[in-house]
Amino acid sequence: MVPCSQDVGFKLQPEALEKAITDKTKWLILNSPSNPTGAVYSRDELAALGEVLLKHPNVLIMTDDIYEHIIFDGLGFHTIAQVVPGLKSRTLTINGVSKAYAMTGWRIGYAGGPRQLIEGMAMLQSQSTSNPCSISQAATVAALEGPQEFLAERSAEFQRRRDFALQAVRKIDGLTCESPEGAFYLYPNCEALIGKSTHEGRVIATDHDLTLYLLDEAKVAAVQGEAYGLSPHLRISIATSMAKLSEALSRIENAIGKLR
Image (cartoon, rainbow, N blue to C red; front, side):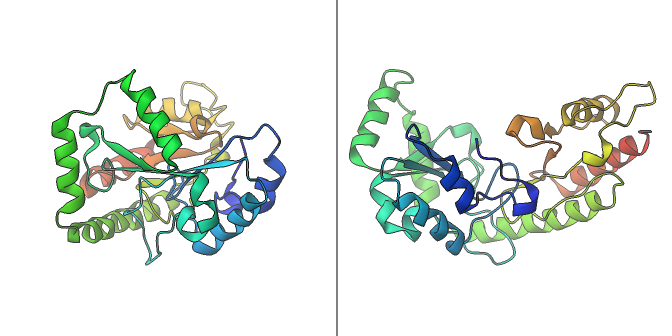
């Protein structure tokens, strides 16, 4: 694991990638826009990572582009096989309809990559889950080949929610938050709250403790940064209505205000 901390925008740096690669390295996994941080790699940033990878021909690349269409502030989406064509023959590009098309329950993802790898994946899947159902496949074709204008509209709505939630979180004493560039999450830093106590005297020793406290005190569910390998943070989803966001963030503020 290569930590991608807040001070580097939650993004993998070329020098960190170079240092992490050994003769045992098989895959680099990239996710942009990122869950949970919302970080988005620019073309130049992917090109810099590509320069490192071109020197290591035994390393395969798996790029998770599932949030491709949920991107903010006029930024463009780029994927590494597009930016660095020399890596295409060893890149597995993964996507799906769960996020952009709000089709989570249809359980459909897809991938593009080297024929040998795709054939191996198909063989493995055929012996484990058999196949995706025909109805889901037909729905996915309809989503991908149908009107696409709504994607920009949904992205703009998510940006509106991002802006609202970000402003609210930044007003909460004890939380700081970078502005996510894509996806539909905030990933606030809660370091200032570690060591505080609840009104019952229970110490908030970790970000996991804080999420349990918020669930109990505020009846709001968040995910601890520990689950993503980067603490102390919280992941807050903004994939809900403005009314629910407003209520949830108000509850979080009230609950955190009770810590001592």
